[in-house]
Image 1 (cartoon, rainbow, N blue to C red):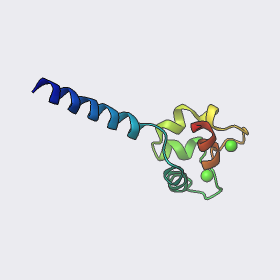
Image 2: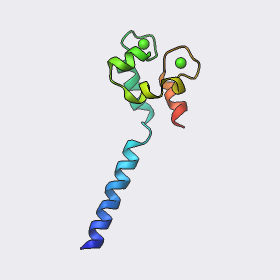
Image 3: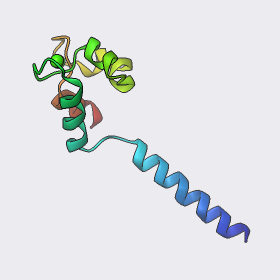
Image 4: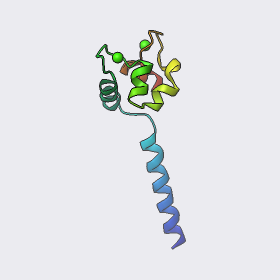
Length: 81
Ligand SMILES: [Ca+2]
Ligand SMILES: [Ca+2]
């Protein structure tokens, strides 16, 4: 009975870690589109805050590789690698 519980916990942990890791490209693109309310192709800090995108807000300076004050899907993908 105990070993079954262990296996179950292991599966649950594995599932959690894989799903909470990097988004797939499609998810990133869709998320950026959703957040990019002025449709300039990138997410500004204000847009990230409006959409409550904590991952982007917390890592904004790191994600914005070309320092144009907006984060594009490409920049997020590069940072995820
Ligand atoms: Ca924008
Ligand atoms: Ca940028």
